Length: 235
Ligand code: SF4
Image 1 (spheres, rainbow, N blue to C red):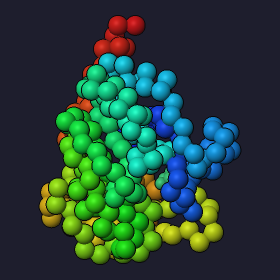
Image 2 (cartoon, protein in one colour):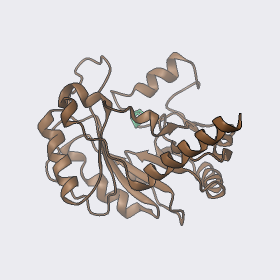
Image 3 (tube, rainbow, N blue to C red):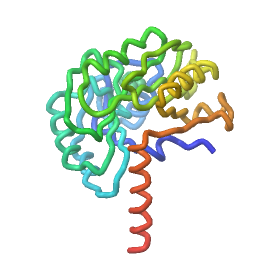
């Protein structure tokens, strides 16, 4: 049975809003529908959400479900990374489509910086991520996919995520199995874990689904389950 990535990695939308303007953005629709902020193109910071980090039960947190790391103001980053340093029990994931605009370094090792590549012409973003962000770990998300990405340079990358466009957008792009296999085989040749998102189930078929996590995320989930068992026996 395919696992939903949200059951493994929880969203913490500490910044809401994004200037990138992707036509397929589901976050923009949700933000407008639920009136979360006045203007999606003007990102806003919600520091009160950082309180979730104080929970001692370990968690894998995704912090850019409704924003792009490139849009984060330096003052926001400073405050957020200060909280991360105080809460090393968790793993923290970030994603960007504009790695060339970021110049950031950290000594923290429980942070994962990802770049989104949706087509062959965006492959340079992977090199830009490695050049402009120093520290932590790197991963790549291929979602949605508009063509066969072809050969990719994955040295230094520790995880890849592959998906397809969801929703009902006119002109929606559906990933092809051969595109998914191409990336999977390249990653596996380098020993890089591959996670096919649950939406690929109908495209790949259950026996072909691969849902691997980096060992660091698995450790967090194991610790989480130990905490849950302990909490159940306590109450
Ligand atoms: S980068 Fe993400 S949040 Fe920003 S517009 Fe594109 S899909 Fe939406």
